[in-house]
Image 1 (tube, helix red, strand yellow):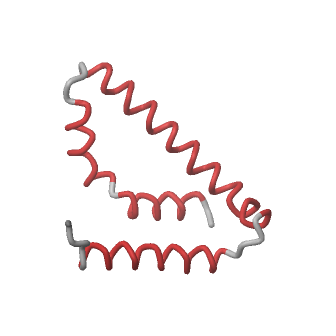
Image 2 (cartoon, rainbow, N blue to C red):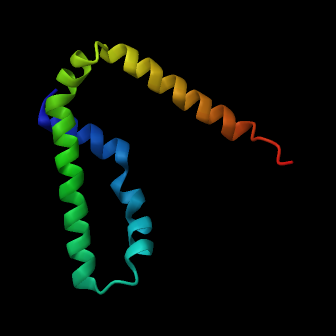
Amino acid sequence: MTIVSAALLLFLILDPLGNIPVFLGILRHLPPQRQRAVLVRELLIALFVLMAFLWVGKYALEVMHLRQESVSIAGGIVLFLIGIRMIFPRRKA
């Protein structure tokens, strides 16, 4: 996977334009200069974490004796269970 394809995939998955209202709501009490500093700091942390997983993730899976397909299937099952809970919420006693 190239850096460009990974960046495009992350842009589509993370929906940065849809998250703008969330960031504006959380940071509205800060002065504009501090808002920029917080955003830059958080973006750099996210970039570091994503790049670390991009480069080291394959080796981490090998250390745990997992294949990428099994992790994808497990993620699908977790999302399915979350969806089922959203459709059929628990009754409150």
